[in-house]
Image (tube, rainbow over all chains, first blue to last red; front, top):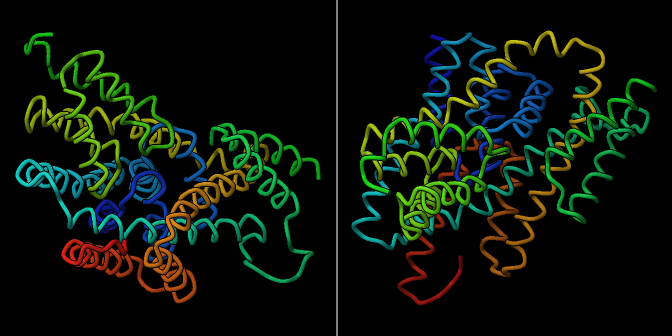
Length: 187
Length: 190
């Protein structure tokens, strides 16, 4: 039963994540945190952190991680299979269509409609992680006492450096772990 | 290079190493594949590689997996596609299995948990950097429909908590319909 649930969840993630890179992140959060509660938001954030630092697409990394956590090796296997099955079918169908028609107006239109949507969804997922980083699992409040100033300073500093110097994400995440981790241990 | 050298093993080895050294996922895989399969092996024409990238980008799912399927299929048919998929998903599968196995022990360690907490802010910065770049591109294009879709999708998902799949299906369909209309009317809304 759990295998079927994992397979079905990651099949949906594979089927509806357009746009590469972080596009799958909001869908994974939706399935894994919001709908099934397989990971807490903090664990999901760790997963994104790990995914950004290790090779491989976020969806495959997540399928393996979540599958292993929930149902061991078999869970990892069915989740990964679920996440790539839609790709296999759709990519080969599109290749066939493309060889026949060359120009695919409808597909281009779908992608044009999804591009702004994906930005909005990534922003939403990013905001929920930001709230967790700034205020902890209790969530957003106006009370300044519960605001994590180390996290705010790290976020603002790294975002500034990223915009200014086009840094490698791995450098940013490792640097943030080093500086932030030292601050958290000291204070 | 002659056709015989397009062996399953070379295809597996190539996709395995490409996947093992591509961090963060996404489009990075395309130039790396071009280097390997077009420049080094001469198995594909540059034109074919561009088509593969375009189709991989148009399909849902991970870019690296999509591109591998197409390269494998193009070179050695269906079994080639399967070999390429295996080569592509094995490195992240092995690495994440190992990390997942040790995760519980890692998480409880005071030093590692402090580092992970510090990394969280860094990951947020990376995500917002991506959003600013992608969102900025849409705003700068100065087409009102994509901007409305972006703002609308954010409100409907983040504030109203509408099912994410409905939003994706709706916006994708809208994009398809508008682009079909645009083609007939000779306009450019999207």
